[in-house]
Image (cartoon, rainbow, N blue to C red):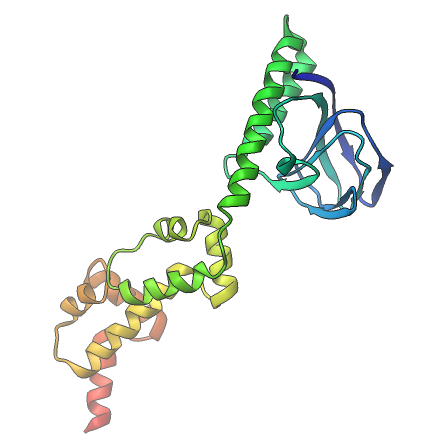
Length: 253
């Protein structure tokens, strides 16, 4: 049986503590903003914007809001949730699927159109299915930070080819924004800048050790064209490729 029992939406100021309590039904708490922690049973979990907690019936839980928070929570009966999705805090997916369901349920609850209770009961079942899907993705498909080591090796081997950051993110299993954040955190530069530095390093080697024309070096190093190469080279080094090469030749004389 899938049935919505209650729905509430609250705004909490910072430093609010909700003492331990239980419900005789399942509960989902969606945190739209703010941050803090919740203890569910014996485990403590941190929450941030676009996180949600799934709590089993009769499980003691509390909340500590370290910052102002807006949230929606619902109580419901459901026969479509498994033990693996119980008493945990999850991060919503990139499409904010759970947030959309919660907001649609809030709208239906407030508007009270004809048949709204039946619609809400149907949405409970759909919501439970989406939660199982997201928890399954997080459990079985959680990317490993070691994948960043593999991806930088791939970039080192293929920097002269066209590499889209979105494609690199997909290869690691992270979202585009998460990949960029973790990459910069680990290597100190963004993926785009890392590729640029690798291409410039290779171009400098060609400028120093060959007589290859600048236009050919640009393409061979992975740049779109000579104009892009010269612009980026001067931005990073303070001189044009021709000036760089000419100074080296003069230094050797």
